[in-house]
Image 1 (tube, one colour):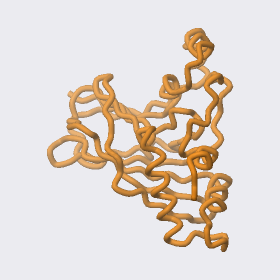
Image 2 (spheres, one colour):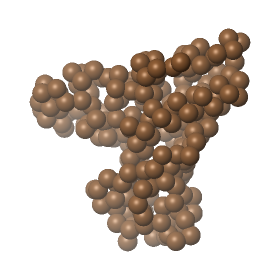
Image 3 (cartoon, one colour):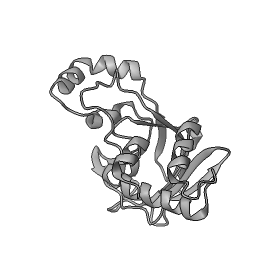
Image 4 (cartoon, one colour):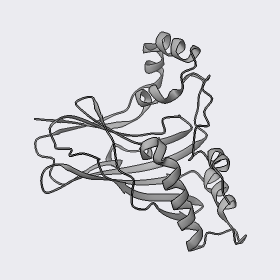
Length: 218
């Protein structure tokens, strides 16, 4: 039986980041390359967000050892299903690392029906989609980010083209924003140090460091 403590060690049940650590000190232990497809439906609203995450080989090997109940050093189909189910449950508390804002107001997402898992060339891959909990028309300022709010997992979009709009985006202007971590730390140094000295966690600040896709729509 796989408990939440073990999952926390694997970084997907999270809560692993020490609350006393400031962003300048905190650093990820798990790394994933990502692709995000933002799908625009026929009615001109965001219908779903499709994720692909490819994890680093060290983390992938750790997951394999943890879930390899057959002890044959490879994933069987039922083991992959178990990984997907465990991750689906574990990431619920973190919004599936999917963060949307419309005119600076947060938009939550519904749980995915399933998280598909594969293991190729020594790397764990996740495939899943989430839908906004409420209608999300292409109107005003929209922001889409994918990140671990605890900063334990680094989710990286290698190329701007890994953030994709599928469908008719109308007159929206698309921009990929890649914040400079050093500039962010300098800009918020005083407020960050003050907040963390009072025992705050990283959740309020990790969004400043995350790559995001922004749409400005008429």
